[in-house]
Length: 374
Image 1: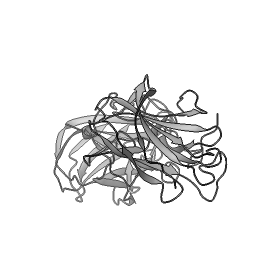
Image 2 (image 1 turned 45 degrees about the vertical axis):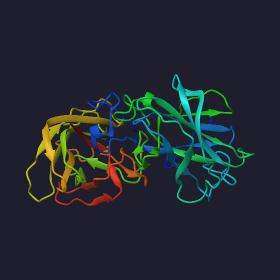
Image 3 (image 1 turned 180 degrees about the vertical axis):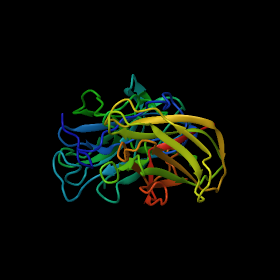
Image 4 (image 1 turned 45 degrees about the horizontal axis):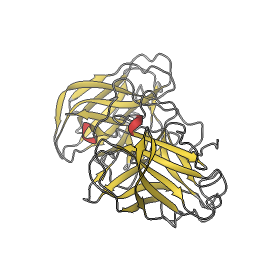
């Protein structure tokens, strides 16, 4: 089997998901407030190439309605084409088809077909690909979007689809979205469908009534090699949040990697306004991660707290452990398209001086951190 290319080196920090208190069943985006997505690095699957590959995005519909288009992330590198790379030739002609489900694999009922992307090597790679003639899909039902290269020579002319990869999952890959509800698969030369190294597809569904739906991951970069941050000692991370509407939050989760076998304490999660000297509104300390070097979600609950629309808060994570590098985490970078799973009310910050200053990690970056809601 071909080795899958990553956007970042293989020596990335490891990843996992859905552990210690993270939801283990299907949930709606409204059950989370923050970035309830996990990722270690972007990976890709060629649509075409040798062997001739098809790519499948399995998903459980979050809403009943008719798909008008699907937003996807095509990845290419015009400076480095060739077999086994992101792309080659003219990129091919990429078409998407919506299929029913048969025991987790694409079934035999073709529901509708997209227009063909005849210029996949142009633009930024973010595409909304139009569908026509689709029947209404039903909330709670599993479907498949399959990408196929219709070019007469898909071995020579191909490009790739990106997805979010997780090195070592702990439980399900994404909070609130079991693997049976969201996964990437592929097949070579028309053979059997198989799943690669744990992946979550990057996509969004655009319905004819103008609504946007997941459950795809709406982040196109895991900054695990270029922007990891430590938690411990004077090092903290924070999500600067201004709610666009009132929220009631009942706890918080953060995804971290434990770097030492027995740190003195777990992760301390707390929320306060950003006004200097403001009191802590709610706080909780998690237990310790189970495995060293494997990121996982750590969660805790607190008494319900009402957040006011337009008020500026900071959800922060630190550790009472004196070790400045006992824990590590990294942010994800938002895709441009709309999705209910993308967190648009905040951005990532960090502090290396015990909270005296909070530099911005990136206006479109979010820590892998969220609050639970009622």
